[in-house]
Image 1 (cartoon, rainbow, N blue to C red):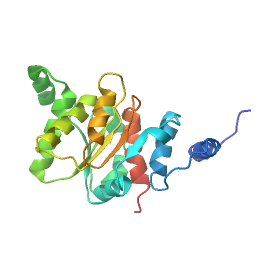
Image 2: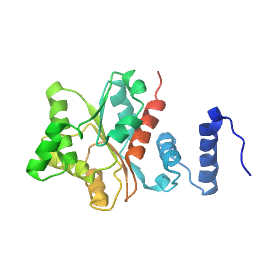
Image 3: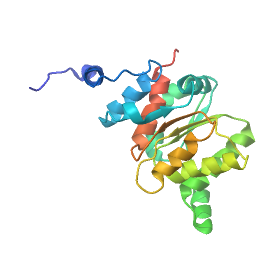
Image 4: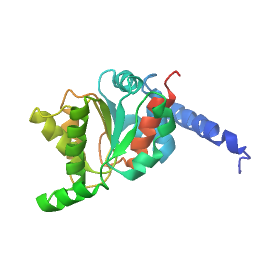
Length: 213
């Protein structure tokens, strides 16, 4: 049977269905992590996120404190940049940046024989340090972005304030996520191959929507 739902009620009904299905599976979510997990499920229609999305201690609280203090968001794709609610973020003084399309990033990546994602993370880290800012890295596509953030951490060059690590794919994806899970940098990481720029944006938006204004 087709449900007749008013356009303004579609999202509300979707979350009701998610709640019903989680209950039928016997899955009870941590109340603080719940909104983030449900929005990832809502974005993907994939209930596996209820089991694979991993949070460092007090991750949601720490991410929201960063946003409230005016932290920026650094993404590895323009798709994630587009999907993040920039107007809501701006209410706290933050902006969203993606360095991937910058010509100097592309040129340096070609000359060094590495990915633009790697170079973009280096440039982002350098810029954040130079202006004394804080940032949340939302990685939804490139495992090399996470690998670079871990290398900078190991070399004591730069420690990210927070990492959302949800790249999707097959080559080095699982391994790159595990590299972040091993650190003491605050994170929300999806274990396994699944993820994507849409999931990265959904997690950022879930954090934003749960904040008091």
